[in-house]
Image 1 (tube, helix red, strand yellow):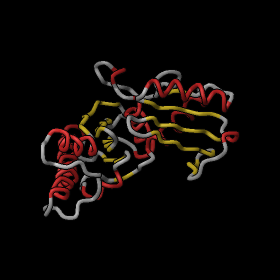
Image 2: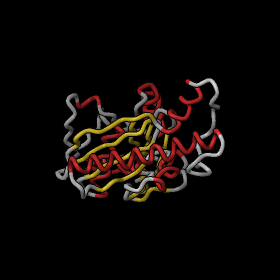
Image 3: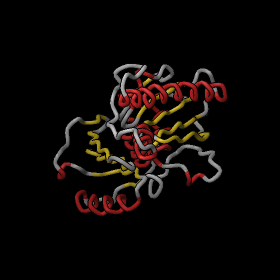
Image 4: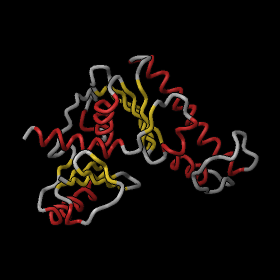
Length: 233
């Protein structure tokens, strides 16, 4: 069975094809896709994708939060306020790495999601992402330029560009390490930290407290959620 997993974010849409349990590195023709599962934080994109996928596969896709509810206890005061991608990451993290757990997602926003030792979603922290923060410097100041996000040349910048990059990369790395330490004091000093998201490959080497990097955590979580749903039918 070939499953198409789609993660719709605010900046990017990520696709993954699963052949049984294996995440393929290449895309297959649309005729090979039998079923699909979607996690989205952009509602109008969700509706368009769902309609197109039903035409392609002949089956109604499963959508996280609508016709596929994740089997994880959510302690948010208003549970529907939690982004479904965050719950997918929490579910995938506990299934793949155990609990207690902290998942740090470096996407458009940076999110910290905290899971207790009994695999309950406790809540988290939301911060502006690396690119948002870098762009804000250019937009809100008269003399700082708009630059691309990349590795800084040195810790102490010797020009404006590298001073900005150093501030973003080393600053958010230090922030990440500091928040992880505080969260561990709250839940468990043994809590593992998993890093994911579009910018994780850039920043993880500067973060001392991240134990494991899995850029495909959300896609894997969609596969795990789909398997949970189909087993219960």
